[in-house]
Image 1 (cartoon, rainbow, N blue to C red):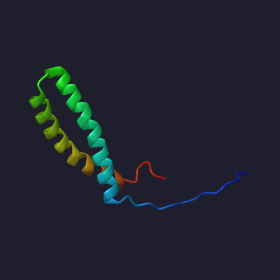
Image 2: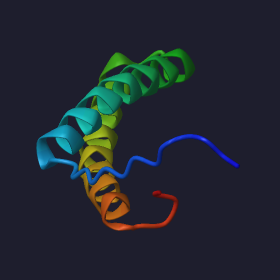
Image 3: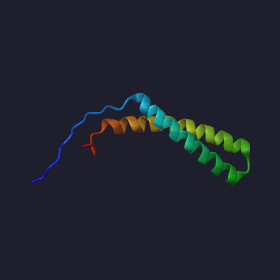
Image 4: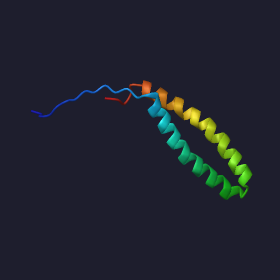
Length: 77
C-alpha cells in the first residue's frame, strides 16, 4: 500500500514571465554571440551589428517558441 498524497495544481504561465525569460536568455546569448564574433573577426563594428541583428530576431522567435510550448500539454503532469 502506498502512502502519500497527490497534489494537482493548475498553473498558467503569464506572458510577462515568458517575456522576462526571453529577455534574460537574450542577454546571455548577446554576450556570447558578441564575444565569439569579435574573437573571430577582430572587427568590433561587424561583431556589434551582427550581434544586434541576430539577437533581435532570436528574441522574438524565442518568445513565440516559449508561448507555443506553454500551450502544449505534453510532458506536463
